[in-house]
Length: 150
Image (cartoon, rainbow, N blue to C red):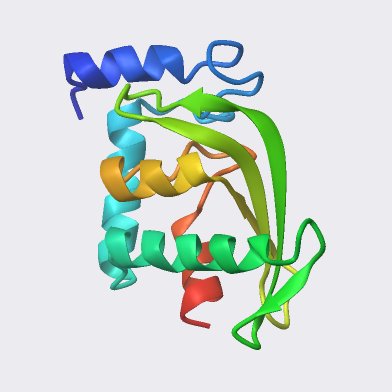
């Protein structure tokens, strides 16, 4: 898929060392447009809605904050740990600035973990961007299915 001017500019800001040391694309060689298109197809196939998933992740993050840095059980199902960092980070699409944090959600029964941030939730909700394969904060659609529908 052909990238728009805005996508090209955002992709440049997503490279390692620009906004974060590791960037947002991981080892993914696909274009930003192709990554988004593939994840949108995966969401459709799994009957996931970007807004609803973002709401669920935001809920887990806010409840996890109540553990004050210690793992806490949320809704009797998920083990959530919320870590705060000093500073803020801008969205690579230049439509917001977000508090730096990392939320770790352990999936019930599997030990698999999702790691994301407030910026990750914004990227998912506003841009349908789950981040590239190999990105430390990638929200892979199949993992989201296991976490939220499993």
